[in-house]
Image 1: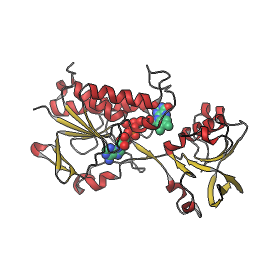
Image 2: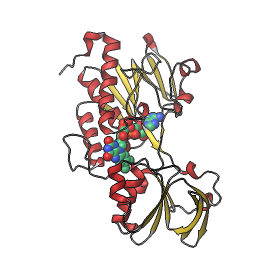
Image 3: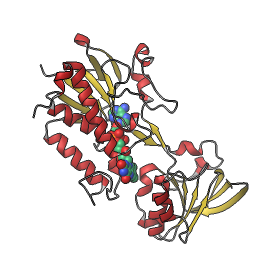
Image 4: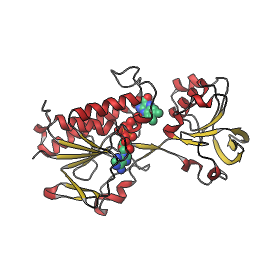
Length: 326
Ligand SMILES: Cc1cc2nc3c(=O)[nH]c(=O)nc-3n(C[C@H](O)[C@H](O)[C@H](O)COP(=O)(O)OP(=O)(O)OC[C@H]3O[C@@H](n4cnc5c(N)ncnc54)[C@H](O)[C@@H]3O)c2cc1C
Protein backbone atom coordinates (compact mmCIF):
# COMPACT_ATOMS: atom_id res chain seq x y z
CA UNK A 1 0.00 0.00 0.00
CA UNK A 2 1.25 3.51 -0.79
CA UNK A 3 2.25 5.17 2.51
CA UNK A 4 0.07 8.11 3.45
CA UNK A 5 1.93 11.17 4.68
CA UNK A 6 -0.07 13.89 6.40
CA UNK A 7 0.99 17.52 6.14
CA UNK A 8 -0.42 20.12 8.51
CA UNK A 9 -0.84 23.50 6.82
CA UNK A 10 -1.59 24.44 3.20
CA UNK A 11 0.85 27.33 2.84
CA UNK A 12 3.82 27.24 0.45
CA UNK A 13 5.78 24.80 2.68
CA UNK A 14 2.91 22.35 3.10
CA UNK A 15 1.88 22.45 -0.58
CA UNK A 16 5.50 22.01 -1.67
CA UNK A 17 5.94 19.02 0.67
CA UNK A 18 2.71 17.57 -0.74
CA UNK A 19 3.84 17.97 -4.34
CA UNK A 20 7.25 16.44 -3.71
CA UNK A 21 5.80 13.53 -1.76
CA UNK A 22 3.33 12.88 -4.57
CA UNK A 23 6.12 12.97 -7.15
CA UNK A 24 8.09 10.50 -5.04
CA UNK A 25 5.23 8.02 -5.03
CA UNK A 26 3.63 8.68 -1.64
CA UNK A 27 0.00 9.46 -0.84
CA UNK A 28 0.15 12.95 0.69
CA UNK A 29 -2.82 14.54 2.43
CA UNK A 30 -2.66 18.21 3.39
CA UNK A 31 -4.86 19.22 6.33
CA UNK A 32 -5.51 22.96 6.62
CA UNK A 33 -7.34 24.49 9.55
CA UNK A 34 -8.37 27.61 7.65
CA UNK A 35 -11.20 27.41 5.15
CA UNK A 36 -8.86 28.29 2.26
CA UNK A 37 -5.42 27.07 1.20
CA UNK A 38 -2.50 29.41 0.52
CA UNK A 39 -1.32 30.28 4.03
CA UNK A 40 0.02 33.80 4.47
CA UNK A 41 -0.07 34.35 0.72
CA UNK A 42 -3.83 34.73 0.92
CA UNK A 43 -3.25 38.12 2.49
CA UNK A 44 -0.48 39.30 0.22
CA UNK A 45 -1.77 41.32 -2.72
CA UNK A 46 1.69 42.83 -3.34
CA UNK A 47 3.56 41.92 -6.49
CA UNK A 48 6.11 39.18 -5.97
CA UNK A 49 9.72 40.17 -6.38
CA UNK A 50 11.21 37.21 -4.52
CA UNK A 51 10.20 33.91 -6.01
CA UNK A 52 12.16 33.31 -9.19
CA UNK A 53 10.09 32.98 -12.33
CA UNK A 54 6.92 34.80 -11.25
CA UNK A 55 7.68 38.53 -11.59
CA UNK A 56 4.72 40.87 -11.18
CA UNK A 57 2.40 38.15 -9.86
CA UNK A 58 0.69 39.02 -6.58
CA UNK A 59 1.26 36.91 -3.47
CA UNK A 60 -2.40 35.90 -3.58
CA UNK A 61 -2.09 34.71 -7.18
CA UNK A 62 1.12 32.88 -6.31
CA UNK A 63 -0.76 31.07 -3.51
CA UNK A 64 -3.54 30.13 -5.95
CA UNK A 65 -0.95 28.75 -8.40
CA UNK A 66 0.78 26.71 -5.69
CA UNK A 67 -2.57 25.27 -4.65
CA UNK A 68 -3.68 24.55 -8.23
CA UNK A 69 -0.35 22.84 -9.03
CA UNK A 70 -0.45 20.59 -5.96
CA UNK A 71 -4.14 19.75 -6.45
CA UNK A 72 -3.71 18.98 -10.16
CA UNK A 73 -0.81 16.66 -9.31
CA UNK A 74 -3.19 14.67 -7.13
CA UNK A 75 -2.30 15.92 -3.65
CA UNK A 76 -5.36 15.58 -1.40
CA UNK A 77 -6.01 18.96 0.25
CA UNK A 78 -8.67 19.32 2.92
CA UNK A 79 -9.56 22.69 4.45
CA UNK A 80 -11.40 23.59 7.65
CA UNK A 81 -9.85 20.63 9.45
CA UNK A 82 -8.66 20.68 13.03
CA UNK A 83 -6.28 18.15 14.55
CA UNK A 84 -7.59 17.05 17.95
CA UNK A 85 -4.99 14.46 18.97
CA UNK A 86 -1.99 12.57 17.70
CA UNK A 87 -0.88 9.14 18.90
CA UNK A 88 0.87 5.98 17.81
CA UNK A 89 -0.90 4.23 14.98
CA UNK A 90 -0.76 0.80 13.46
CA UNK A 91 2.60 -0.71 12.39
CA UNK A 92 4.67 2.05 14.00
CA UNK A 93 2.89 4.86 12.16
CA UNK A 94 0.84 7.76 13.48
CA UNK A 95 -2.88 8.13 14.09
CA UNK A 96 -4.35 11.61 13.75
CA UNK A 97 -7.68 12.19 15.44
CA UNK A 98 -9.61 14.86 13.57
CA UNK A 99 -13.05 14.38 15.05
CA UNK A 100 -14.23 11.78 17.50
CA UNK A 101 -15.33 9.61 14.61
CA UNK A 102 -12.50 10.30 12.18
CA UNK A 103 -9.00 8.93 12.48
CA UNK A 104 -6.42 9.32 9.71
CA UNK A 105 -3.50 6.89 9.73
CA UNK A 106 -0.18 8.16 8.44
CA UNK A 107 3.35 6.85 8.07
CA UNK A 108 4.72 10.33 8.85
CA UNK A 109 3.64 13.88 9.58
CA UNK A 110 5.05 17.17 8.29
CA UNK A 111 4.23 20.21 10.43
CA UNK A 112 4.03 23.24 8.13
CA UNK A 113 1.80 25.48 10.21
CA UNK A 114 3.70 28.73 9.65
CA UNK A 115 3.42 31.75 11.87
CA UNK A 116 0.81 34.30 12.80
CA UNK A 117 1.21 38.02 13.17
CA UNK A 118 1.41 39.22 16.76
CA UNK A 119 -1.90 40.94 17.27
CA UNK A 120 -3.91 42.69 19.94
CA UNK A 121 -1.76 41.11 22.67
CA UNK A 122 0.73 43.91 21.95
CA UNK A 123 -1.73 46.29 23.62
CA UNK A 124 -2.62 43.98 26.51
CA UNK A 125 -2.96 46.00 29.71
CA UNK A 126 -2.95 49.36 27.91
CA UNK A 127 -5.80 51.48 29.33
CA UNK A 128 -8.51 52.08 26.72
CA UNK A 129 -7.38 49.31 24.36
CA UNK A 130 -10.42 47.17 25.10
CA UNK A 131 -12.78 50.06 24.29
CA UNK A 132 -11.68 50.46 20.64
CA UNK A 133 -14.35 49.95 18.01
CA UNK A 134 -14.00 47.17 15.48
CA UNK A 135 -12.06 48.62 12.57
CA UNK A 136 -10.05 50.98 14.78
CA UNK A 137 -7.55 48.23 15.56
CA UNK A 138 -6.33 46.24 12.55
CA UNK A 139 -3.75 43.50 12.93
CA UNK A 140 -1.35 41.67 10.65
CA UNK A 141 -2.35 41.01 7.05
CA UNK A 142 -5.67 42.83 7.44
CA UNK A 143 -3.67 46.06 7.72
CA UNK A 144 -2.92 45.68 4.00
CA UNK A 145 -6.60 45.74 3.01
CA UNK A 146 -8.58 48.90 2.18
CA UNK A 147 -5.52 51.14 2.03
CA UNK A 148 -7.23 53.45 -0.46
CA UNK A 149 -9.95 54.02 2.17
CA UNK A 150 -7.34 55.62 4.44
CA UNK A 151 -6.79 58.66 2.17
CA UNK A 152 -6.87 61.82 4.30
CA UNK A 153 -6.76 59.83 7.55
CA UNK A 154 -4.07 59.34 10.16
CA UNK A 155 -2.89 55.82 10.96
CA UNK A 156 -0.62 54.69 13.78
CA UNK A 157 1.55 51.75 12.65
CA UNK A 158 3.02 49.80 15.56
CA UNK A 159 6.16 47.89 14.58
CA UNK A 160 9.59 48.52 13.09
CA UNK A 161 10.15 45.63 10.69
CA UNK A 162 9.69 45.26 6.94
CA UNK A 163 5.93 44.78 7.23
CA UNK A 164 5.47 47.94 9.29
CA UNK A 165 7.54 50.02 6.87
CA UNK A 166 5.91 48.50 3.81
CA UNK A 167 2.49 49.23 5.27
CA UNK A 168 3.47 52.80 6.13
CA UNK A 169 4.76 53.37 2.58
CA UNK A 170 1.54 52.07 1.03
CA UNK A 171 -0.55 54.22 3.38
CA UNK A 172 1.47 57.29 2.38
CA UNK A 173 0.96 56.37 -1.29
CA UNK A 174 -2.77 56.24 -0.57
CA UNK A 175 -2.70 59.77 0.89
CA UNK A 176 -2.82 58.94 4.61
CA UNK A 177 -0.68 60.51 7.34
CA UNK A 178 1.29 57.87 9.25
CA UNK A 179 3.01 57.63 12.60
CA UNK A 180 5.30 54.62 13.09
CA UNK A 181 5.95 53.66 16.70
CA UNK A 182 8.43 50.90 17.50
CA UNK A 183 9.57 49.35 20.76
CA UNK A 184 13.31 49.57 20.16
CA UNK A 185 14.72 50.56 16.78
CA UNK A 186 13.91 49.94 13.14
CA UNK A 187 14.69 46.41 11.99
CA UNK A 188 13.36 46.90 8.46
CA UNK A 189 15.78 46.52 5.57
CA UNK A 190 17.74 49.67 4.81
CA UNK A 191 16.26 49.83 1.31
CA UNK A 192 12.73 49.73 2.78
CA UNK A 193 13.53 52.41 5.33
CA UNK A 194 15.13 54.69 2.75
CA UNK A 195 12.01 54.45 0.62
CA UNK A 196 9.78 55.60 3.47
CA UNK A 197 11.64 57.71 6.00
CA UNK A 198 11.62 61.44 5.29
CA UNK A 199 8.45 61.34 3.22
CA UNK A 200 5.92 64.11 3.94
CA UNK A 201 3.15 62.96 6.25
CA UNK A 202 5.32 60.48 8.16
CA UNK A 203 6.52 60.60 11.79
CA UNK A 204 8.76 57.85 13.17
CA UNK A 205 9.33 57.20 16.88
CA UNK A 206 11.81 54.63 18.21
CA UNK A 207 12.08 53.42 21.82
CA UNK A 208 8.31 53.86 21.97
CA UNK A 209 5.39 52.28 23.74
CA UNK A 210 1.66 53.01 23.79
CA UNK A 211 0.72 54.14 27.29
CA UNK A 212 -3.01 54.79 26.89
CA UNK A 213 -5.77 55.00 24.27
CA UNK A 214 -8.93 57.06 24.50
CA UNK A 215 -11.85 56.89 22.10
CA UNK A 216 -13.16 60.28 21.10
CA UNK A 217 -15.99 60.18 18.55
CA UNK A 218 -14.43 58.52 15.47
CA UNK A 219 -10.85 59.14 16.62
CA UNK A 220 -8.52 57.37 19.01
CA UNK A 221 -6.30 59.64 21.08
CA UNK A 222 -2.96 57.92 21.56
CA UNK A 223 -0.67 58.67 24.48
CA UNK A 224 2.74 57.11 23.95
CA UNK A 225 6.23 57.16 25.27
CA UNK A 226 8.70 58.04 22.54
CA UNK A 227 12.37 58.11 23.49
CA UNK A 228 12.59 60.11 26.68
CA UNK A 229 9.39 62.05 26.13
CA UNK A 230 5.65 61.55 25.99
CA UNK A 231 3.53 62.35 22.93
CA UNK A 232 -0.21 62.55 22.36
CA UNK A 233 -2.01 62.57 19.00
CA UNK A 234 -5.33 61.53 17.47
CA UNK A 235 -5.50 58.78 14.86
CA UNK A 236 -8.31 57.18 12.90
CA UNK A 237 -6.98 53.70 13.30
CA UNK A 238 -4.10 51.59 14.53
CA UNK A 239 -2.25 48.95 12.52
CA UNK A 240 -0.29 46.36 14.48
CA UNK A 241 2.58 44.86 12.49
CA UNK A 242 4.88 43.87 15.29
CA UNK A 243 6.41 40.54 14.39
CA UNK A 244 5.28 36.94 14.36
CA UNK A 245 4.53 34.02 16.63
CA UNK A 246 5.05 30.44 15.39
CA UNK A 247 1.89 28.35 15.18
CA UNK A 248 3.18 25.66 17.54
CA UNK A 249 1.13 26.15 20.73
CA UNK A 250 -1.46 23.62 19.53
CA UNK A 251 1.16 20.84 19.66
CA UNK A 252 1.07 20.81 23.46
CA UNK A 253 -2.66 20.00 23.26
CA UNK A 254 -2.43 17.24 20.67
CA UNK A 255 0.81 15.40 21.46
CA UNK A 256 1.18 12.72 24.14
CA UNK A 257 3.26 14.12 27.03
CA UNK A 258 6.15 11.73 26.35
CA UNK A 259 6.41 12.96 22.74
CA UNK A 260 6.12 16.59 23.70
CA UNK A 261 9.34 16.26 25.70
CA UNK A 262 11.17 15.09 22.54
CA UNK A 263 10.12 18.17 20.61
CA UNK A 264 12.82 20.82 20.43
CA UNK A 265 11.78 24.48 20.35
CA UNK A 266 13.67 27.72 20.59
CA UNK A 267 12.73 30.22 23.32
CA UNK A 268 10.21 31.91 20.99
CA UNK A 269 8.45 28.60 20.31
CA UNK A 270 9.82 27.92 16.79
CA UNK A 271 10.46 24.23 16.14
CA UNK A 272 14.09 23.21 16.00
CA UNK A 273 14.87 20.64 13.35
CA UNK A 274 17.95 18.83 12.09
CA UNK A 275 19.42 19.37 8.62
CA UNK A 276 16.67 17.16 7.16
CA UNK A 277 13.74 18.83 8.92
CA UNK A 278 13.31 16.11 11.58
CA UNK A 279 11.79 17.40 14.81
CA UNK A 280 13.14 14.89 17.33
CA UNK A 281 9.92 12.87 17.43
CA UNK A 282 10.35 9.88 15.09
CA UNK A 283 8.09 10.29 12.06
CA UNK A 284 7.39 14.00 12.62
CA UNK A 285 9.08 16.61 10.42
CA UNK A 286 8.71 20.37 10.06
CA UNK A 287 9.02 22.79 7.15
CA UNK A 288 8.63 26.48 6.44
CA UNK A 289 8.28 29.50 8.71
CA UNK A 290 7.28 27.36 11.70
CA UNK A 291 10.90 26.20 11.99
CA UNK A 292 12.70 29.00 10.18
CA UNK A 293 12.69 32.24 12.20
CA UNK A 294 15.84 33.59 10.58
CA UNK A 295 15.03 32.99 6.90
CA UNK A 296 11.23 33.04 6.75
CA UNK A 297 9.81 33.59 3.29
CA UNK A 298 8.15 31.91 0.35
CA UNK A 299 11.29 30.61 -1.37
CA UNK A 300 12.68 29.04 1.80
CA UNK A 301 9.25 27.57 2.67
CA UNK A 302 9.09 25.89 -0.75
CA UNK A 303 12.61 24.53 -0.33
CA UNK A 304 11.96 23.27 3.19
CA UNK A 305 8.78 21.53 2.04
CA UNK A 306 10.89 19.67 -0.52
CA UNK A 307 13.53 18.91 2.12
CA UNK A 308 10.97 17.41 4.52
CA UNK A 309 9.53 15.28 1.71
CA UNK A 310 12.98 13.92 0.87
CA UNK A 311 13.65 13.24 4.56
CA UNK A 312 10.39 11.28 4.80
CA UNK A 313 11.37 9.25 1.72
CA UNK A 314 14.84 8.58 3.07
CA UNK A 315 13.61 7.52 6.51
CA UNK A 316 10.87 5.25 5.16
CA UNK A 317 12.70 3.74 2.17
CA UNK A 318 16.36 4.26 2.95
CA UNK A 319 18.86 6.48 1.08
CA UNK A 320 18.08 4.89 -2.28
CA UNK A 321 14.38 5.63 -1.94
CA UNK A 322 14.68 9.37 -2.37
CA UNK A 323 14.70 9.35 -6.16
CA UNK A 324 11.65 10.88 -7.76
CA UNK A 325 9.21 8.69 -9.66
CA UNK A 326 8.38 10.95 -12.53
C1 LIG B 1 1.38 40.95 3.42
C2 LIG B 1 2.47 39.92 3.33
C3 LIG B 1 3.58 40.17 2.54
C4 LIG B 1 4.59 39.21 2.42
N1 LIG B 1 5.64 39.48 1.59
C5 LIG B 1 6.56 38.51 1.36
C6 LIG B 1 7.61 38.72 0.41
O1 LIG B 1 7.70 39.76 -0.20
N2 LIG B 1 8.52 37.72 0.23
C7 LIG B 1 8.45 36.53 0.91
O2 LIG B 1 9.27 35.64 0.69
N3 LIG B 1 7.48 36.33 1.84
C8 LIG B 1 6.54 37.28 2.08
N4 LIG B 1 5.55 37.07 2.98
C9 LIG B 1 5.66 35.90 3.89
C10 LIG B 1 5.27 34.57 3.23
O3 LIG B 1 3.95 34.63 2.80
C11 LIG B 1 5.52 33.47 4.23
O4 LIG B 1 6.89 33.46 4.60
C12 LIG B 1 5.15 32.10 3.67
O5 LIG B 1 3.78 32.07 3.31
C13 LIG B 1 5.43 31.00 4.71
O6 LIG B 1 4.97 29.77 4.22
P1 LIG B 1 4.61 28.59 5.24
O7 LIG B 1 3.96 27.55 4.39
O8 LIG B 1 5.78 28.24 6.05
O9 LIG B 1 3.55 29.19 6.27
P2 LIG B 1 2.15 29.90 6.03
O10 LIG B 1 2.07 30.56 4.71
O11 LIG B 1 1.94 30.73 7.25
O12 LIG B 1 1.12 28.69 6.03
C14 LIG B 1 0.84 27.95 7.19
C15 LIG B 1 -0.55 27.35 7.07
O13 LIG B 1 -0.76 26.48 8.18
C16 LIG B 1 -2.09 26.65 8.66
N5 LIG B 1 -2.16 26.20 10.04
C17 LIG B 1 -1.77 26.82 11.18
N6 LIG B 1 -2.01 26.05 12.25
C18 LIG B 1 -2.56 24.90 11.79
C19 LIG B 1 -3.02 23.71 12.41
N7 LIG B 1 -2.95 23.52 13.73
N8 LIG B 1 -3.56 22.73 11.65
C20 LIG B 1 -3.63 22.88 10.28
N9 LIG B 1 -3.22 24.00 9.63
C21 LIG B 1 -2.67 24.99 10.38
C22 LIG B 1 -2.33 28.14 8.50
O14 LIG B 1 -3.73 28.43 8.48
C23 LIG B 1 -1.68 28.39 7.14
O15 LIG B 1 -2.57 28.19 6.07
C24 LIG B 1 4.51 37.99 3.13
C25 LIG B 1 3.38 37.73 3.93
C26 LIG B 1 2.37 38.67 4.02
C27 LIG B 1 1.16 38.37 4.86
